Each structure stands twice: as structure tokens, then as C-alpha cells.
Image (cartoon, rainbow, N blue to C red; front, top):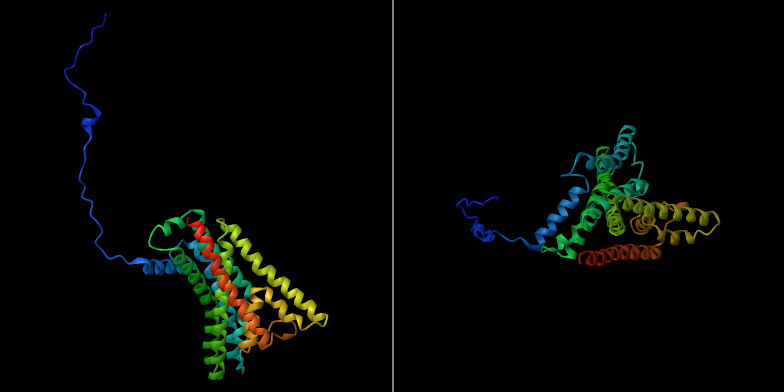
Amino acid sequence: MAVEHSTGTSVPAPGDQTRIHNIGYRSYDGPRLGRAYARRSLYSQSLRGAYGLGRSVKSKVLPMLLFVVMCVPAAIMVAVAVATKAKELPLDYTRYAIVMQAVISLYVASQAPQSVSRDLRFKTVPLYFSRPIETADYVRAKFAALASALFVLTAAPLLVLYVGALLAKLDFADQTKGFAQGLVSVALLSLLFAGIGLVIASFTPRRGFGIAAVIAVLTITYGAVSTLQAIADAQGSAGAVPWIGLFSPITLVDGVQSAFLGATSAFPGGVGPSTGEGVVFVLLALGLIAASYGLLMRRYKKVGL
């Protein structure tokens, strides 16, 4: 029969091993920068991200490539103007963005989802709103960042054209006026395209779906409107051509600049809207920008809950 022997040691109760250590937590005594600083930081980071700055090399390839593609034709035009001692540039400042609209659309399609879709996919939007930043701050920062990135993309080639025109000793007053008109045009285009791209991208956490949707909206509408305008012009309904241009973002910008900035219209027959019709174009463009902002606000109020 086995006999149990005591070892003479006692096992302490689990509660006897509990210790409370004072590790010296201290409250934060530094400056509290608040919403304005958070909004500026979100804007700057989103703007840098639109060109892949601060991200991997792979993320820089497409935006930088598209930037180069936008500027190379302008440099070629300048070289031709200087070599041939031309009296004017081959392409007006206001026409450049219209001609390069495919590149601009591709940039919006690639960067709008990058700006907002990842926040939706990884569910970081509520974390933003848990800090002093609010829904309006997030939307304004993202909207302003993408619009600024688009303005850089579209204004840089105009600057190349302008500097080249001055080097070619073209008329300073005419070139300055054309350059200013071009900047106004691309500023409107940047706001409009940024709003449309962000609204579409904000409804899907999948970046690929966002890219496809933005490309579809921008290219299909332009193709459909251009086809209908050509048909209307061929059938002698020239009066309908400007009104059809209301249904595509790029033709909408074209109508505004041809009505108020003295630009040559890309509409069939080269006839853009009159001043009265141009007012409708301006109101619709501004309305779309405001509507885009309002839709983003409503969308992120729901997401942040």
C-alpha cells in the first residue's frame, strides 16, 4: 500500500502571486493641434499618395507615367514651334486637356479608388472619425487632394506650352491670356472629374471595381455623346449638338470654355454653345460638383456610424 509523504512545502494560492505595478503612466502635456491640423495632414498625405510619394515604387509607376505622357506632347509642340519659328502654337491652351482627355480619365480611374477604396476595404474610416476629425473634414480633404492632383496633371503641360511659347518669342500678351484661360478650364475640369471619380469609388471597397466603374462612366458617356452629336450634325440638327454635350463631363467642360473662354469647340462643326446656352453649361457643371460633394457627405456619414 502506497503511503503519501509531505514535501514540507506549501503551494501558494493563485491570488498570492498577483502584483500591481505602478509603471508611471503620465498624461500628454504637449500641444493639441486639433481638427485643422488633422485635415491638413490628411490632405497632404492624400495628395502625395495620388502620385505615389511615400509609397512603394510600384505605386509610383502609373501616376508618374501618366504625368510624363501628359507633358511629352506639349514639349514636342514647343520644339516644333521653336524649330519652325511658327507664329503660334499648334494647339490652343484650352484645347489641350480635351485632346488628352483619355489620359486624364485613366488617371482619375486609377487614383480615385486609391484615395478612398482602401479606407473602406480595411474599415479605417470609423477610426478617422474617432479622432477630432469629422465627416466634413474627411470629405473636403479627399476632394481637395484629388482635385489638386488633377490640376497639377493638367496644368503642368500648359506651363510647358507657355514657357516654350515665350522662348519662341511669340506674343507675350496673347500667350498670357491663353495660358490664363487654359488654367481656368483645367481648374473646372479638375473639380468636376475629382467629384465624379470619388463618388463612384466611394461605393465599392474593391479598387478594381472602382477603376472599371470610373473608366466606364467617363469614357462611355463621352463616346455616346460624341456619336449622338455627329449624328445630329449629319442630319442637319445643328441646334441640338450643344444640348447633347450636357450629358458628358468632358463635353460639358468643352461647352463652358467655348462659350466663355474663347476656345474653339470640339463639337461637330466646331460650333459650341452660345453665351445663353453656356450659362446652362456652367450651372450644370457647378451643380454636379456640389452634388458630388453632397453625395460624399451622405455616404461617409453612413460609413462612419
